[in-house]
Amino acid sequence: MLLNEALKLGGHTMADIEPVYLGFPQQPVAFENKGLDASITAEPFITYILRQGTAVKLMGVDEYAPRFSRTR
Image 1: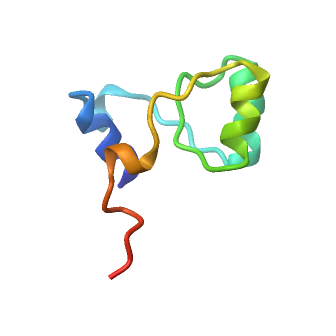
Image 2: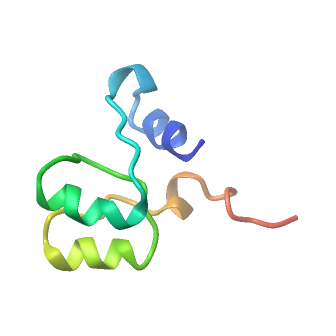
Image 3: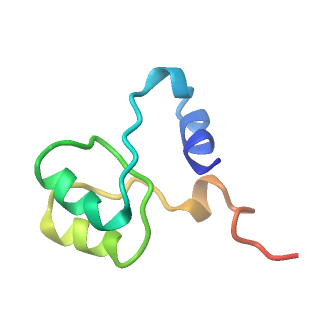
């Protein structure tokens, strides 16, 4: 759902990408090896990836899917 929302915001669909499904701990290594162009990840992995300098943060879930984490 989150990936779909992020893609829609950029004017894309799932047909426009080649998804790679990795656990959060594998994402820093994949960015380092240039195996990923983008990801939806969580802390503390966001901070780790930013500190290693292999990616930049475009936006947080709260920006492109603001109602996602709200409880009723």
